Length: 307
Image (cartoon, rainbow, N blue to C red; front, side, top):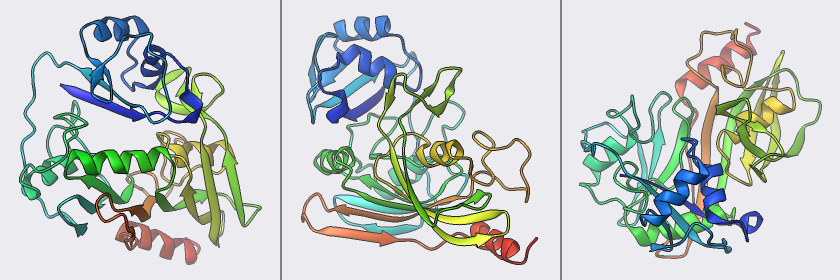
């Protein structure tokens, strides 16, 4: 069974839970199906089943269980994980480009979750279900960098609440097409499913959510720009969508950028470099930074040489 979870923010207060879930599910589940599944107890708030007409409140922990026809066992795998920090509550990992975060159809092995299950001996939070144990937030397969996982439900709830409150520090480094006119700026545009392609996100007013990205130019590199992007919110593909929206798509991004890409890259040049949060148990602020990966460093060297 797959379990999707959300912590309700200000903008969703008062919305019917069936409408909210139908809009938020990546699988594109219809509202009528959500209603039927609510009748069967698959829709919960703070782990208690609710009816489909439940009105959302700020801070609600919503969970939506999607039963699988055939239960899939996630196999622990011995991997060489780049562990940045670990204790009995949280684990912080530097994910390489090309690694999927959690199992999904077509990617049932070799994911970060497979490696975490082996390393943590199964001690991961269960809030997100058997498919996504420990996973509080994700980064895309072709995005490299730092992310955290929770080892127990209490830690998971604390970190999820911090994400909902936008108090977690997340800074990314990226290379975008063209020179930015301003040294720094803020993109405040709502993001939702692309009405013409449900697999993609877009800046849209329809069924969207508030999204804010702050960017700073680090270096001008010919017809490209090396930037730092800081997330105030955390929507799916947020940096990629926002930078494309203002005419500066990420280099290597085949989804939101040009179909013809230079430099034979394996995906968007985007690296999660800094992550900061309040520890769920000690309540102390912790911040971690990971170096740029080799693919990123080599690209910068090429651009600096004018290649």
